[in-house]
Each structure stands twice: as structure tokens, then as C-alpha cells.
Length: 301
Image (tube, rainbow, N blue to C red):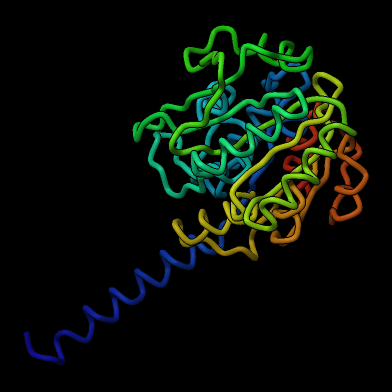
């Protein structure tokens, strides 16, 4: 084809690609935490929240950033529209709703076993969340020695088929995170010891656990957090961070608050989270806080 005749084709292609990219980048991105933010305290999602959230799916990018596993997240999000990769397990896993793994951040078996051994000196044993296979089947390992907080948490998982009870708990090859539950003072002492051993090669999150009234210590790969997860999602999907709004309530949400254009804390959020939020909602998770914020945007338009 002569060069003069190619010009209209090239121009048309350029316009198409420009418009496609423009439309994608112009879409607002909404990423919400699940527990105590999007989910009610009884772990349900109201029909009202489903309707408002799903109504945004045509013209917006929608996803979640949660400490939950893929398995639990998929259960909770039944009939909820998600059109971007999800940040799971505090950012240790980024995956699509149809189980395509985008990114992983693992703790090796060697390091995880050292952590378990150090915890045993305090008389406590962790939950270990690991990747069982490349089909995104997860393993939830726990010791046969449990404290009252762990026993209560496990009552929520009795119907799951990925629970593995261990008499001598050891980590697997690819571990997403290690979670201890107990009293704040004890977990703070354990965290301090582990930080001396591992320095900044691991990430330690100590936070209150609102469901069972204790604290939990989450140990992750140093780059496993919701902020890194969001960057992976944006790079994979070609999204514009300046269009990002996030919703959260707890300390593991602070990284994505710093990264987002608009950070929104629900009324029941921790005080430190509220102090970093651009918007503090008057509603709690049990009052459909996220949905009411999104509906308010629609009304404002």
C-alpha cells in the first residue's frame, strides 16, 4: 500500500487506541477493604450495598484489598461485581476472580519454621496460610495446641476443606503469611524478638482483632502489603493511580491510604486510620458506609 494511503489507516488506529486508553484511564478506581469496612460484622453484604456497588461496574474499576484468602473472599463476594485483580492476604497474593495469579510475595519454609520455633518458646503457635498448588488452592495450617482466640476463629472455618491440623506444625514451601493471636503484651514481645532476628526483611503488623476481642500479629514478606498490591494491579491493568479511591478501617490499610488519591475511613475505623484519611464517613460498616459514600457521589453528579 502506498504511503499516502497508509496515513488514514494509521491516523484511525491512533485515534482508536488513544480513545481506548483515555476511556480506561478516565475510569475511577474503587478498592475496598472487606472486614469491618465493606462486610457487616456478621460477614454479610446487604442487598443495598450489592445494588449500589454493582451499579458502578460499567463505568468504574472495582476491586478489594483484604487480609482474607482467595477462598473466603470469593465466598463473600458472590454476586458482587469485581472487574480488576484482587489484593489478597494483605498483599501477599494478587489474583483475578477467575484464579489467575498476578503476583505473589512468599515467606520461605526455612524462615517460617524459624518463626514458628521462636513462637513456641512463648508457648504459642500460629496459623500458617500457604499456597498448596498453582491452581490457587490454599492451605490453612494450625497446631493442635490452640488458645481460646484461635479456637473461636476456627469455628468460622469448620466447613472449609483446606484446614490442616498439625501435631508439630511446620511451614510449607510457599507461605503467604503467619498469624499469631493472643494478648497484646505477649504478641508485642514476640514481634520485638522477631524484628531483632529478621530486621526489615519481614513485615510485622500488630493490630486489634475486633471479632474475638484480642490482638493478632501478622508476619509477611517485606513487600507484602496492600500498597504494593495496588501497584501490581495498576501495572497489570494499565490503571491511573490518580483515579484511585480506597476504603478501610485498620492498620493494614494505611499503606493504600498513602498511595490513593482519596482515602476513606469508615466511622468504626481505628483512630490512626481516621487521622490519615481524606474522608471520614459518618456511617459504620454495619450501616453500609461504602455504599452510602458511592451513592452520595452519584447524587452529587
